[in-house]
Image (cartoon, rainbow, N blue to C red; front, side):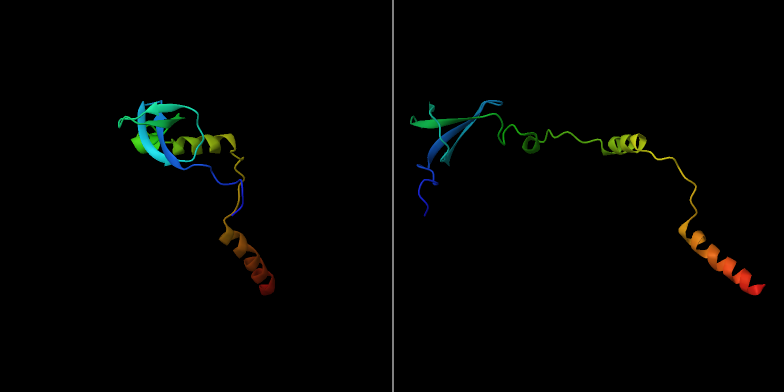
Length: 106
């Protein structure tokens, strides 16, 4: 194994989500200098979180729905091209054949 690339210590750590004031005990090698007293009376290193599974919108079901139809309409309105009169592919392909047939008949 290479020296100096592996974490020093894999230990029990308390993670605290400050957005919903939820704490949980887990193992980690993340460095921290703060400690907190856990429910069992022992002191553990503390890692502060801004968001966790307790407060993330995906896990809590507070996800906002995206207005896809509105975005598509906005895109089409912004990049709308001038409607050029085009013949359908089948009619355009059939015309030269019909003209050739008329020339041969003459």
